[in-house]
Image 1 (cartoon, rainbow, N blue to C red):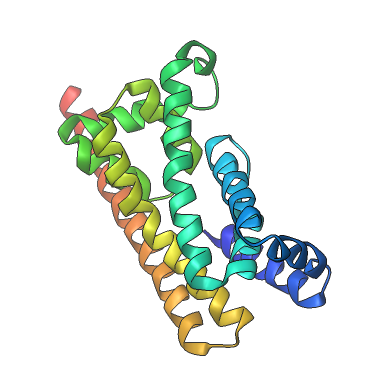
Image 2 (image 1 turned 120 degrees about the vertical axis):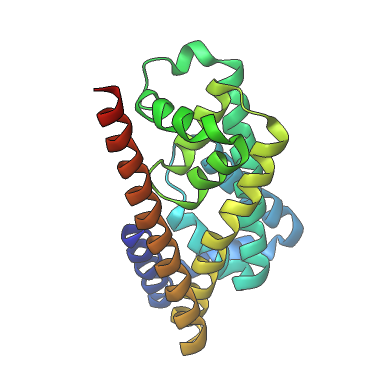
Length: 209
């Protein structure tokens, strides 16, 4: 989360220096076609195991914190579905990849409640965004619950990034504080869930012995 914040601030700095102004102007010139191209590109980054934080800030620069945030949120949902479908359809390809270490953790969370487990996986950064997509596809979780929890889980991260962008880029202290507060709440939730899950793991090991 700290890395995400650092990347966002650095990208805003690059935008302020004018190095990316020509790209932004070029995309804005094509209006609807440019929007579709940006949306599809961001969706592709969310679908494949590629970093999309810097391009996300570019989207906010082009379309602002409101429409840009909506674009990021929607592309995050559709990209998550794409990753889910890839893992579901080509499960043999993902066997033995970096997703494998996260499967056991996901299965443990899903055992009690699939909806709650998916929501935890989205809200806390123990499992990377792309790994959640692929692990859910490999485990063949219920698609409706997966999409609903993805929409809910991606939303606060999008709000935090959009607010932080508005605060830094537009010079709004209020939005900067809101963005930082959301990030801090997510970090606190992450710490709480990690503490709870590690405590349960130790208790189960003691019981087994």
